Length: 114
Length: 110
Image (cartoon, rainbow over all chains, first blue to last red; front, top):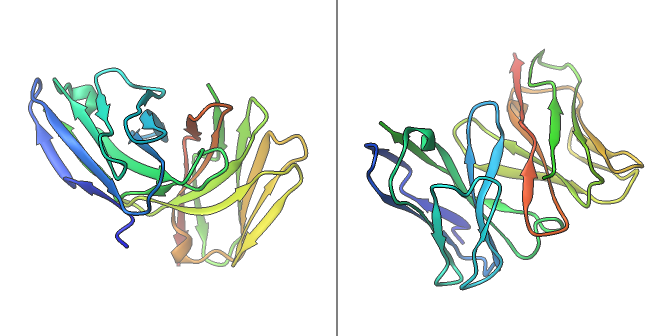
């Protein structure tokens, strides 16, 4: 089992460009999450999904969109990248509610917006 | 939102020394998680505490949740270079959101 995978691992964008980050999990988990990690701020939840076809906003959703068309995939989109979106992005999944279930994390995507 | 404060922000210890990291919440915790992150990598689950007064150990790492379920500590005994990394506490809320503390960066000097 690969667990949680993320593509790409690194990306450099210019301001205003768009891109999609892909997260895939092979554990048949219902819940999936996108976080961003910035120095001194820990991880902050961007969007999450509690099942195929569902999405919900997290703590810092502005400037991002997500889709969960298939249970195993969770896509994070940036329509018009801004330098403030320079960060390391982590995807995670869990069997059920994160309050009672361990999350499994991907290796991260390092994004730089110039 | 669930605010989790971690202290200290960073820690440098000599190999073999004991250390403690604290995580404090302004609200009652439903489940408190400890994760470890090696530099440049994803997070690895360490332990989860749910009940007030609960204590769990794995190898040389012990985590405790206080009776009021608002404070947790992570204690490492006889630290080793393999313990180096960033330690994060995290907790969910009554919904499906999850919050992390700001992290504690641990350096262990051989």
